[in-house]
Length: 103
Length: 289
Image (cartoon, rainbow over all chains, first blue to last red; front, side, top):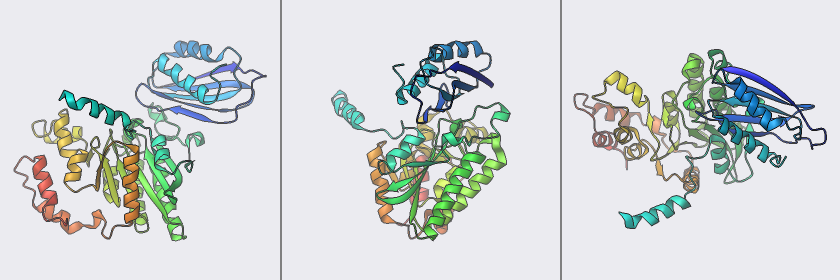
């Protein structure tokens, strides 16, 4: 098991989040993603059952969050061996439920 | 055979599968629309303090959803176990969530607020990583069910595909009413454990047809160990729950029918290899119909 943390700058102009969203389940090949409002930045905490994949996580999180258009939020990911494709789908599902899928 | 395909396909397509839903969505769909309110939800982050220490990733709700709401207008608490997380195993936190909610429901009844409970079992039983703490929590669930069922029905649903085993199969047996689907299995021990103890010649855990013929929902219904065999359909399961709510607290709870089950035990001949037919006959012989 490995814990990873990433931080990205949030957009100052984006409308602040007003709700919490949970998607997914900590089941085989899946993950849960919790998103909730917080001040200042995008902070992502990942707990994954698979060791040694930090560089893949970093690349994937940068692709999803580094563009600087999303509002500040706290994201917790509990991963049970999901492939990068599944991780991306789950994160996009959470953003869609927050009405952020076009940004 | 081919002529029956279109109608079978139509019926499958018109079905709103209960099994395919996660614990949270199952709770939402059973309660009256718009009435569900989750207690100790995922954002309270009451996860297991023991799993991470053993290198196991935790789930933010510890795999148990506690949902308060209304069923046909009546106050109701739904306790749903998420089978996909650690096989639906019950540890300290998840177990305490279920036991605590049942105890509060009993208190509500004593304070003049009739509150019923639905328990959605999808569990292999105690979480081995939490050992005695999980077992203690399951014992608390047992006594809380026995307390609450005096006032209002405690209705168990075992939809599948995990099924219900171990100490939680005892919790299921304590329920006022039990609803199962064909996909469900109920047993004190899981198939792999029985195979390990009894030998593969007697019990082959990989033989799905055999396992379901002995412990599957249909067999358990025919053996009179559950009250309803339902299709895997949200509306149908909800209709069965309605029916049992209307029936109210049973005059004699299943787990109080001690003489019936002792007589059934006396009929077991351990020298003969058990068959599904034999098990059904042993359980139903002399049963009140």
